[in-house]
Image 1: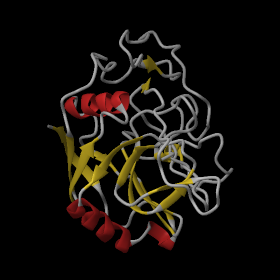
Image 2: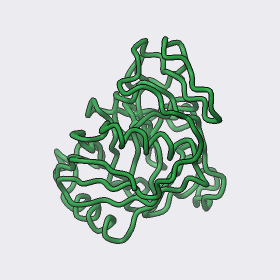
Image 3: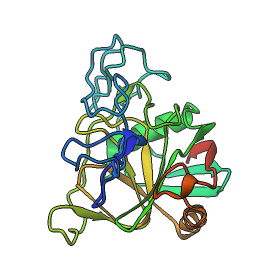
Length: 252
């Protein structure tokens, strides 16, 4: 979520979400690999902000999607940036079972527009959810990385739409991303791309990961089964023992 690219978001115990894993480490998060994170395209695992140096330029709508610093054209181009999308649900067909995400365009209009665009382009099809965390303060599954290691992204940057209404955590500094929430991983401000994380257990993180949807009970049941399988090698952060391959992603 940071959870999420090549740097993982650091929760109370340290998770960097920017690609949840190919972690993107929020610059304000603890210097650990426990937060959902996503590494920048220029330097996987780093927390360097992405910019608009690529020839792809920027869109002219309210979101102003810009190419990242990879120097390469976005794989599927830039979102049309034509305003709020009509889609209300993102349905993921995975090897572990279906996952349904109710999109919240009111809370995060640009993020929802980007996710709907990527799903429509087949960007997520054939990708793996590469990171599972099972620590008491950070329980998420990170997905959305075409590289499968937390370092990948769409080649463009999605504007930050950080939450301001999440309940405060017990530590008085962070907030609680509650069970059922779906948010974007990143490597710090200005680095959100395609990696996202699914929260199956209340997680303590800085309010620096855009929340763009929620999951239903059936989806949480699927995640509970994946979490019960544990992390490869017996650790609390790494590839899930139960593979979660996204076979298709559809919006409706």
